[in-house]
Amino acid sequence: MGKGQQRQPHQQDQLTSWKGGHRNEVVIDATDCIAGRMCSHVSKLLLKGNRVLVVNSERAMLSGDRYKTIDLYKEYLEINSVTNPIHGPFHPRRPDTILTKMVRGMIPKTKTSGIEAFRRLRVYIGTPDQLRNMKTESFEDAKITRSPSRYISVGEVARQIGWKGILRNNPEQGTQNVYQPRIEQSDKQENKNDVENKADQESHNSTMSPKV
Image 1 (cartoon, rainbow, N blue to C red):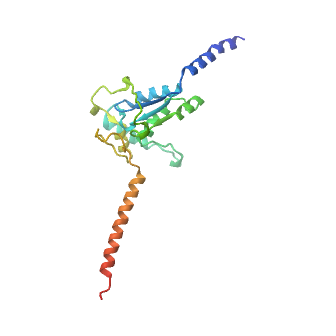
Image 2 (image 1 turned 60 degrees about the vertical axis):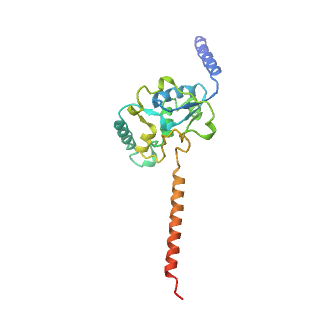
Image 3 (image 1 turned 120 degrees about the vertical axis):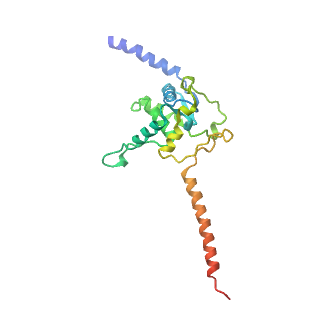
């Protein structure tokens, strides 16, 4: 009986915390935010039942020495399976997947609460068209306190470890089309090659045509 009385307040606390957590949709702008601090706030919002959408993931900042940070990420990529690399671990190279894995490490990913919270997370490169008119929020204690040149962005680190996206710092261009998929690039290259091959074939046929 005593154990039941001890468990009852704990169950009541869980119920009140669940009732207090509203499933709101929160849009977070990662521009000029320290990635680790921002991800800690995002993980807390997810565990409270909110749906969190992070935009401009490539503009999140990493503190520390620029070259040392890049070297650490490159050394991290060398960690693989002893028997076969297809068994993992799989290392993210894109800005959105880098932040996603940061948040994943801050929630109880093996428990039901952590799995459900992780499903409510969406991280984007740039700002999608459907979120362009929505109000974005940021965390004041996660903002950088020094010049941006003292930090390195997640997008720059991703470029150094193999990401093929496009970084645009021009404010007039905004954040649209900051990532150009590799499929589109390959299609453009194939079309260019087709045009060149067709031109070469036409010139070859004109030179080889019999004289009358």
